[in-house]
Length: 241
Image (cartoon, rainbow, N blue to C red; front, side, top):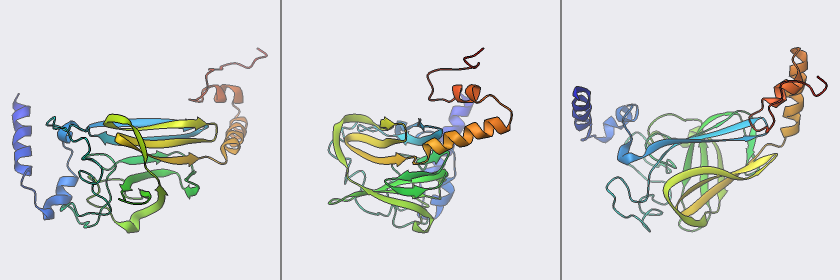
């Protein structure tokens, strides 16, 4: 109980935050704001693992107020906008809530046909009232929201067309249209779906390299492949034994 009172007291001290204090606030580990709980989703494409880490707001918000029809262009403004906190005065949407949404890639991939190196990136989205929306992959993957966003950190920008979708209460990321060498990653919330395609053009070469490495290391390649996360068979011995 004492810890609860202390936490409440500290949060009260942080309420009157001025723009100059935005950077400090952005580095604090605070409880979920408005019940925007943290979520994570991963997908394998061959030997390549993709993970999206985000916080998930809902249409009705923390107070239960119905915001249907008020998400796109209102709660989430069009274009770049000034949030009044942190050093940035022209930010895209954090594509989630609370901390910066991130995407991690275990290997090099292609996003909408454009190359993106392995690593962890901040994932942002710029809305447009008319025309394609813009996914932004930033080298800056830490911080709170997009308060520290700077276009010089951009690793990649790709335009996509938003699509109408079935009503989704909680902002959700996922993967579908899964194929041996590609998948569609998507954000879905309220009545919109915004997706981007991830390709692994060298998926077969990665398998060959992994098998060659196994042989060089003196390990059984069948055992190695059998433990791949996407495999339905957990092979531990060769078929001849």
